[in-house]
Length: 407
Image (tube, rainbow, N blue to C red; front, side, top):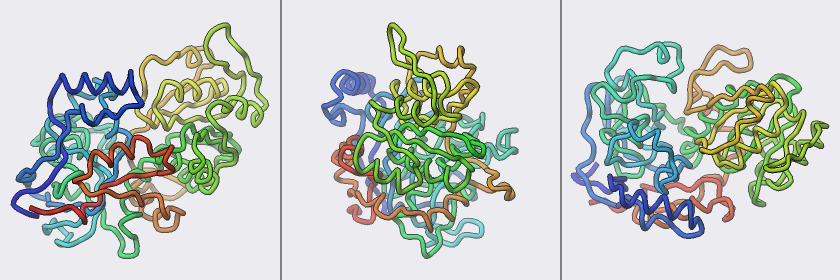
């Protein structure tokens, strides 16, 4: 790591945040990166917070939907006390460890579990962390680190959109030699998809609806086929490449957003009703639905397509202003799926979703999913590409720090 390093940084600016949010909501066809409180800077890099921490030089770092929501100002202000500004985004990371950390030697290639829970913060594990549900940790704002729900949202750790960050031993997972960087950078989102599939908990014979076929939706389909007994999986996909990949990853049916309710009705023999105002809905429908987009329309579709007593899982960051009448009237179970955890699948002993993701990444048809790479200097172009990835036929856009100029 050099004496100074490049990093893309989110900084505090209420006027810029407001302008970016206005552009994103009122004029979504225009790029909002020029107004965003975001800059390419040079810093000394984060310091090691304590023992069992090491420096990591990223090789590749992905751009996630939650990153884009932060950049374009559409993320909920609910998250404002859970971050510390300024921070460097990027939590989908494969990189090289630069220090010896416990049993790991410098030079080890690693992926990072970004959760900043009790152990990295120097605290005794809370009840959730003891149970393996680290995504539910209540102490993500205390300890010897600044507030930050994950690496990439914490001012003290740095993030993947840089030439260097720091990580705790508990966050580090060794990458096998036979797993290329382009697959390894997908391990973190794949671990999240596995956690989502387990949270969905479809039973044998269940009909499942996956709303959205971006990276989150596609990897969720892959995880459903690998780790659950789901029967029919219907995927809502907008663009040609998304439709093709949905089928390759295990979808039974692929429908476009406008015809999604009709597709679910046909597949489940449900009854379709049309209210005087608002969207149509089904009596009957799928057993389990997951919203992998996080828009008002996508969640509305999931709620209106699920049978009475069924389950709706929120995998994408949820929107505001959704009509929750179906939750009440159809007695739906609505649950969240955030980050990763310890999973029990196929009757095997509980295992980290990162361990499961690493194994799946070696064999799954992931070739070409992470081929859209940009050097850090072209960060605006990268973010604009990521924001329009579906239309452009791209699944995952990432920064290639192997090509970034050093100080």
